[in-house]
Image (cartoon, rainbow, N blue to C red; front, side, top):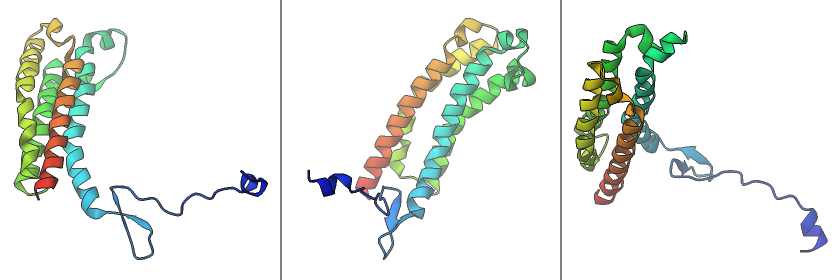
Length: 167
């Protein structure tokens, strides 16, 4: 390395390119509307499941949070309503994927997420038992929901990649 090159400061590139950008005629990276629309559609079911993880954690801890004086959504609406919010968040993810496929926003192979439904049955069984007062049934509800999120996300990713390859 010569002295002159050691003192030179490299300037950062004027633009970067990623899968979510397209280059205009001048070579600048601009957001791609097609990618951002698909990203927005994909984020709905994923976001519902992430919210279900957080809500499951909160629902599980209602008694202890109330005893310690914490005001949470689940404590305010009550255990029964918190249970139904949890169920709707889980099922909403599947409805969102189904609707997105029906309107053509996602490829049909995104329906591979349906292969995670056996996990949903297991989780919802425990959620029902928890709603009936068997709190041990929901002791791990956030962890079980996180596992569902992982399986759902992996299947959705496979469906999106395979769907884009098939087109």
